[in-house]
Length: 340
Image (cartoon, rainbow, N blue to C red; front, side, top):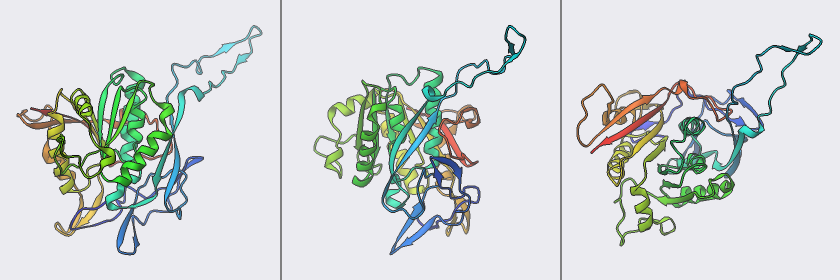
């Protein structure tokens, strides 16, 4: 991903990785390329690929495996039979605690279509959501909204317990791919869940008036949609911080969405990507400084009206439910509220 006046490069701490879901081993030989030239368009490649041969073009289906930890185990208890012989504990089957999500995605994409790929912060935020599902009922029956949903992976997981999920992004190709993934995984949903794929351009008007339906007629908002979003209590977003321009547009949209109806909490996952900036003549994490300029850290700053207050979540306390990927050191999760 890149912003204006920057050169795309790969962070030394984030090598390109291809992961085969059948044998989830990290291939560290592909560490030198993020951008491939295809005619006049730059292509970017995510680190996260399951089962993707490097030369594959077009959409690819990957199966993402998620495993919940087992409950308390007696594996460490020593017991003997009536003859005094040691009894070895049997390993408990994990099949009841695992499931897979099938995702159609691209291995590379142009910059406007990065939503066709799966990115690392989306998997870390998925771990966070699954941890909440396995340890509490906080997400049961919620109405929620995802900004920059991309492939829809996170929203598909949320649909396992939610009442209504709105997956939003921009562009027919990205939105169409998201719809395809919703269809592929509908059997995983809570039977009462309603999953909607909608267009949301952060640089356009929202809520959309009755006479304005955005750029795509296939993913329009209805009056019922807006009533549901008013009651939404959670917003999710992953890998949406990578340029100053888009970060400014994101927070402009967040002010409108988080002021709409009931109070809402945003859970945001990001990865700091270090690129060489021509403006700074230095290696910088595009968008990250801009993101931090909007956030007043909870407990460290006085809360003001019309401001975003956030706290960073310790991801080391969140188990890794998604298998076969490396979190690295540059992913952050934030809980953010808007003070009206």
